[in-house]
Amino acid sequence: MSSYPNLRLRRTRASAWSRALHRETILTPADLIWPVFVTEGKGVTEDIGSLPGVSRGSVDVIAKRAREAVALGIPCLALFPNTPKDLRDEDGSEAHNPDNLMCRAIRAIKDACGEDIGVLTDVALDPYTSHGQDGLLDEAGYVVNDATVDALVQQALNQANAGADIVAPSDMMDGRIAAIREGLEETGHANVQLMAYAAKYASAFYGPFRDAVGSGGLLKGDKKTYQMDPANAEEALREVRLDLDEGADSVMVKPGLPYLDIVRRVKESFQVPVFAYQVSGEYAMIEAAAAAGAGDRDALVLETLTAFKRAGASGVLTYHAPLAARLLG
Ligand code: PBG
Image (cartoon, rainbow, N blue to C red; front, side):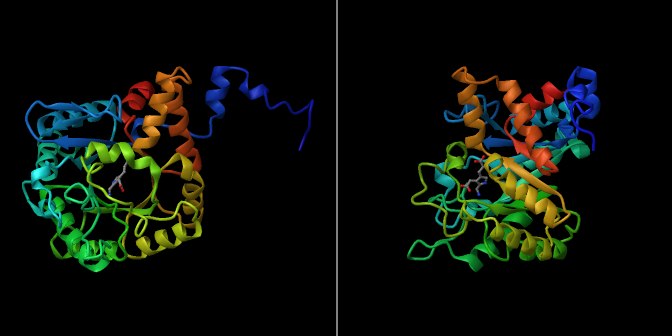
């Protein structure tokens, strides 16, 4: 190893062409998954107060966004429904309606784009329950595991029947990956992928999302009896191992930026596709910083997304996907 002055690390940084040549991590639009919020109506877009720049869209609008994503080189859309209040109940039964918002959006995207884009669907009951929890409650208000898993299997099959390419359970129930995998096999959906929200933390960064799907005002208490304690890392590796053993095709770490150590440890422990979710609160922080003149939006977006890839992520779910793809294109 040579040393200064023979070794000058600034030498390769001195010009743009050289920095490009030595860059270790390359971010492309193909690394991005774009989460979108679906709402009732036709030609409707609705702003979301806590997510400036993001709007819900009716099914036809979402189909247009899918075409926009294809044009930008974004390979996958993640769908979340804003279920009207009168269709929500204790058990989230609207999740099983083959004509619910989610299923109509899946079909509209497939009609518009066919195989040009993947559709990822969220499996969890919170957009459908009157209490905003991800599962079924007992009398004490505890989210029960096994009965919830049965409901999640039905929800996932409903989405697969509508044409979902990737079902992504975000509920953190034990045993749901194996149960959903078995359900998919038995119903002729062997090629539907399972992306497990394997290490999902009980985070303070989800607030704007809950506004976006309309469960924020309904949720009492928190989700700490099923989502992970932010203090834990070894437990995340156990969660990931379990989900892989149960048949997950890929795993996710969520939230993103505050958990890059988890992304790195998962990638080093298991050589599997790892995705990270730059969640709503992270998006809102970047937007707030930009609005306050505390940072340049475009630069903050590209730097944070590059950090995910450097940490080992195969891809990132981000509300900044269309902006980032435009900047990269
Ligand atoms: C619900 C779900 C949440 C998010 C994705 N799926 C919220 C929660 O667990 O309360 C959060 C995404 C975000 O904040 O952007 N199962």
